[in-house]
Amino acid sequence: MRLVLDANEYIFGLGSQRARACEQLLDWMAQAKPTIELRIPRLIANEVQRNLTPEAFREFLRVIDVMTMIDEDSVVPFELGSKYEWQGLKPADAFIAAYTEWVGADVLVSENRHFLTRHAHLPFHVMTAHAFMQRVHR
Amino acid sequence: MKHRTKEIQKRLDKIRKLMSQRPSPYQGLTKDEAIEAMRKVREQLWEEKLAARS
Image (cartoon, rainbow over all chains, first blue to last red):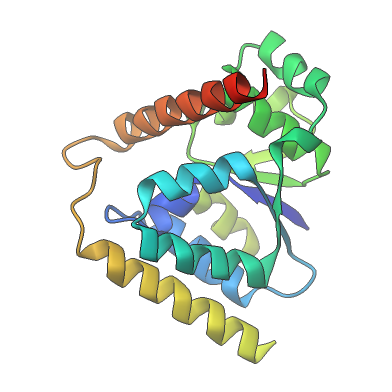
């Protein structure tokens, strides 16, 4: 299974104001089997950087280094982002949707209701951390 | 595999410890309000990236 975690999952899972489900999701990722593949674009890494101290972000990059690699935003075709903007997403959210499609991810885990309410029209599943953890523990 | 798990978990715990000493920029906000604030930062970052490209 290929996953993209939205920035809010990292921020609520690691930042100074945390949500239990997001913490559990990241802890589960640490123990995940090699069949679970994590992908992350530069934009999400930059968002996480804005929410962590420099020392904490350095540790975050080490975690990412062990689990995956950061994809540059420029690899995603512009037209793919435009498609999601046409569907009503803001440009940056549209990019995250385009990136998720481009990497062929099965699931985008996000707490962002703008994704969660549009999941019927997307070529991937969108789930909150809570819903995702319920699914993997089923 | 075991070593990898241990290393990641150790670093996740370290990040949480470092961040728990800092006040949250989302203090006093509901979860939805915090997510909206995060989305504003995302849009701002995205605009900066587009401006740098053109």
